Image (cartoon, rainbow, N blue to C red; front, side, top):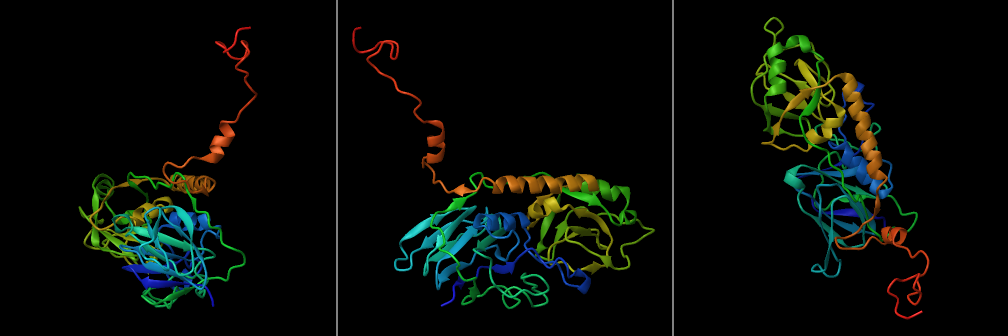
Length: 360
């Protein structure tokens, strides 16, 4: 019997995503892929997977999963936690925490709480979810109906195929001891590419006034509410359609910006006042309707430095992966390395132990 991960209940929006279809934009295919690439990279690292293999991306609520046909190694991103329920005794449960990798035995069920504030969460599995590759990616293209698992969100009763085991899965849980913090502060953007379509006042408004994520926010884009951004009257609010990348901030005639996300179309006819830098897209992806956002302008060079700094932080976090320690547990490795006996003391000798027990 082949190993699989059974979907007991699907959650609100659970999708198979990976690094995205990065070489198919010329064909009019959106990039897709994980909204939070930091979570994709780190959960795969916890399992020893290549960093962009296919995972389950969740939003709002989580699926309930069951191992079938053998054990499954699973890793959770920093917004997810829950319990493993034993196959023969649903009352027998053990806790699983964020940024951990653990083994789900055949027949055991993983029940997770919703992602923090309903944002993005990632569930990775050993070897990646083995759905077919389309156009160089296993990501789900929701609007086009291909990729991922039958081109759609996961449903109850689905059985996600997994790679055959080549060796026994470890029982020990691993974790990122310090987790990974995306940080806070304003979202950084680079001006343009159509700066000339906007007034100086529009840029002043963009960088000094908070905006709110509206209810119209999904994988395709986040529509923002706030003070309208003014177009140059001589230019208007339309352009000949040109290329769009995730992070582009379009401004239609209403003046209310739309930030395009992973599933965005490949071209568009609204001028773009700015583009969110790649290092801040994961932070933006974790915002939910009602959240307030502020922006700050940076140069292309600053954006490149930020991308390199994020990669350095990711590599440093991956280097700390270690066996999980529960609160109150003793770190034996640290104890053995720092609290070893060095030499002996004889309590009977005055020069060894002042106030010794015996007279000379």
